[in-house]
Image (cartoon, rainbow, N blue to C red):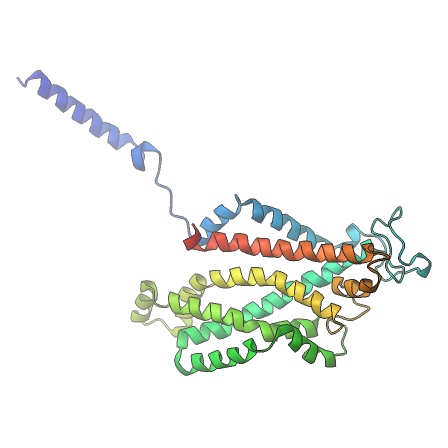
Length: 315
């Protein structure tokens, strides 16, 4: 017969083994091991808990809403004016007062959001697509293509944005937003292309890309299936921050008289027309300028939050 101490030890070992068999997967019986999250799911997990992202996201959603349906919160037309009410202050039904032409400032501020948000989003999409395509090809193929693109980008980097706008847009007579968007895409793609180029160069050195190359994957398959999804995060971050910059640039060019032109409703146009009357009727300037500042700040805050979520070095 085995000693009592040994039997107790054996019984304890058997009980412990049975307990371990019944314990769910995971450390110390905490439950099944959690499946590792991808970069995007991990970023979304962080963004949902970031108050900066929530506040800026709500502001941007409101701006998009009034851009699509401005009549939901503003009755009347921004072009309906009454000279007898020119430069008058706040009145019942007209909380922001009237501008120098007797137009309702509140209505023009609401309708001006459509122009600014449209220009910012379309210009950002154009810059991101063109810059990512050129930079991605340069980073992937390298050699002569990379050298040629770098020299062309250096030329565009040497053109001052405001001065280039004064020169290029001064000959345009169209009052639509497309010339302004085209100008922004023309001068904005080099920044995105350099970000995309560096990100692609880093991604193509990873082991999974080398394995795909060894298995005979074509260049297009490696670029689209393996490299692009893992190199797009820095481009998204820079493009999100740049969106607010493009909105401010549109207002600057319109203020200088070479951007959007009447009868287009724009915050930059309203700020320009209100500048001579800032002492007598400051409300004409403060409301569109305040709307512009809040919009630009919201997109920059959103870009900062996205950068913090997608950059592993900041974790």
